[in-house]
Image (cartoon, rainbow, N blue to C red; front, side):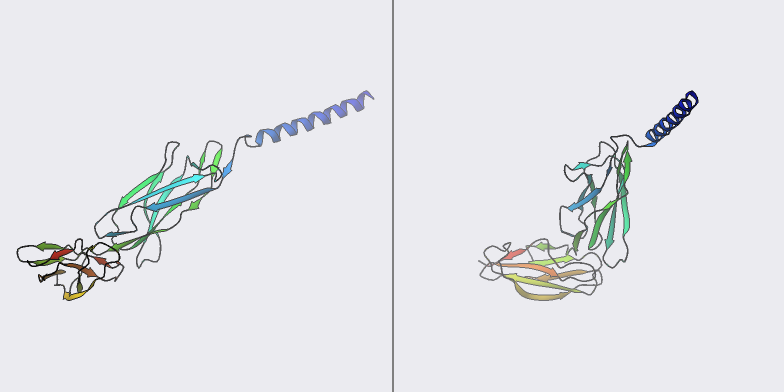
Length: 235
């Protein structure tokens, strides 16, 4: 009986030792694996060529009570008009003090943007990878318009390159030319020079008449109007 008792005790000791090893190899009780989510927004859905747009993004976790991730890399990517694959713009690394991510840039033509998050580990917590929504920024050509009051010459230079292309001059007699309900009609069609320059002398009618320039959408640029409208009248 004494011999049997020793064997039983040894078996119990071995089982206890095995359980102890398993317990040491497991992760801490407070460790957690989270799914992440990325978001991106822009302050303008369209801009004139040469004007900056601000993109604001964030990466969070725990959708029940959203929080910023504390580790990992968020990379802003772009897909310009005509491109077939996404290209990296810049990356920002999250720390335990990082909140929103902000980029200010000047798209060269109509471009789509997104954030790709690498995932990360902070202490015992891990965050999964994620890709944000896509935002699109339309780019209008800049008519570079000016007006000489003494000669009534409405003129400008379209950028980027717009040689031997069409600029439309529209007119309206609306009381409020900035109103969306204002009706505009074609006054004249112009052809730019080899440098993209255009000009025309505006008439002065007895009734106040407003004029503006227009270039239509083409080659990765959305349609856009002149920076200003010009009002002429005779009295």
